[in-house]
Image (cartoon, rainbow, N blue to C red):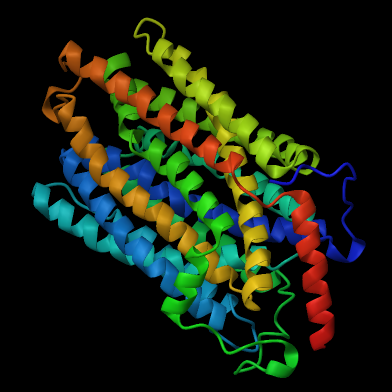
Length: 480
């Protein structure tokens, strides 16, 4: 593995992205965050806490829909890579996806009381399948478009930092979704969820239109032709399965996929444990009081994630993306281990302490992983002659979502193995709470450690990326 160069590379003026365009791209990320967190922050509370649906059934539904999400991701990425129009490759898909998923978000929580448990399960499952179809049509091209905005190693880090700084602002109010449904102005939490869902759907559509309308796509001219033109340096595209095979054959890409697979799904596996420990262990089943702590906890993590993004971005440009990630993930590992000591019913707000440490790990995950994925796309172009950002981002998220699907499906089962029973509320057995706390600490700590090791092995250093950039510029000049 090559060592970091003594000379620190400077970004060429032509490779810099104007701040207005970074803001425009970041606005689209707000929609992405709202979509990513809406189901996760509503389903366990509305379905399990309010409507009494088994946590294992909710986990199963969320796991099955994530399987569908994982299946259609590579398809959406491949289609947007190979689509040609006067508006470029990505924006037509983004438009259809944004409007569709905004409508679905508004409709999927319009559930009345009085249905059977299986009735809620099937309705939620069906609407979630539609939700993830629209979400993928927007998100896969949106992420791929960001990889195309600059060819520079450091400017990519700054772009992903700006995008995640702006997008992470949405995570602060999203942490309060459950608390908002408990407001006195609503007859109950179910009515609160209905009203909230309509507002979220409108916000998704409005915010998504900002990058669709105003973000400049530097690849429009190149990808406006209906068929590839060898005279412009393009080859006939790989088939869908050929592209999948070529993508997975990239060693650098595999390190990123499995590092994210370990970090993110590893924490999702025990997501319900943390929330239910707060509701039932710290507060004995008091939904109103626990929703406030959950809201403050999510807001603190979200706010600190926003504040950490400039720090992570600076670390990535000064220390290199790999070293910056390992430092930040190490802090997240520390915060995970500290959680064991912070579940104190007599002092529930100690539960806020781990948030800042875990938050900086997530900031590094979103900023640095995305920038490293863009680097892997450059390496792939050097090897294959194709620009396949859509396929790379889609396959990347396909692997991660397979992990998410398994995690969500297993989370309810794992929760049951601890002895947890919804009907007991805060009267769970002492052994149940002990096992829930063990799982809440042990699983994410192990997965974060694995992620740190995999990024340590990632081969695309700053020096190597500027070598690749130079070779690509020579190839592009030769085909003009």
